[in-house]
Length: 169
Image (tube, rainbow, N blue to C red; front, top):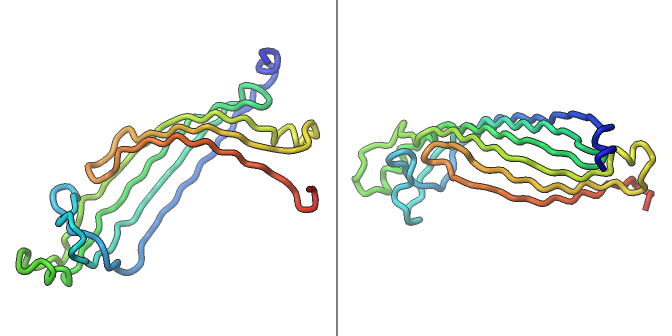
């Protein structure tokens, strides 16, 4: 395995970006107070609002340490724009708030980082060395920083992917 690791020096990069823009208003949710915390916490009221746009960028460089073993670093950046609430929600508050036109929740940004270990026979399948290509990955991703309305999370994930061609099995 050490000799194999010395002969293989492959680098790769996976990157993705997305922009989500909501259309129209949603008929559920809760009103924001201090830094986007929901008010009231119960589900007794339904308040029309427009969710904020989401911008997300993910980057994952990969280094193949052996012909079948790869190590990746993961970085995830996400920004969520503020939700905007409509004045129709004012009737549900029984006079507590005169108007809600233009009321917004706080925007938030979150950054997460992690790593992945991957065992893959796909490159060797392309070279004709194995008969059945498979990827097995372990991924750990954890939120490092974020706004008050963003959840602090971590994720450990095991993925197994089988590849086959039609008519091959």
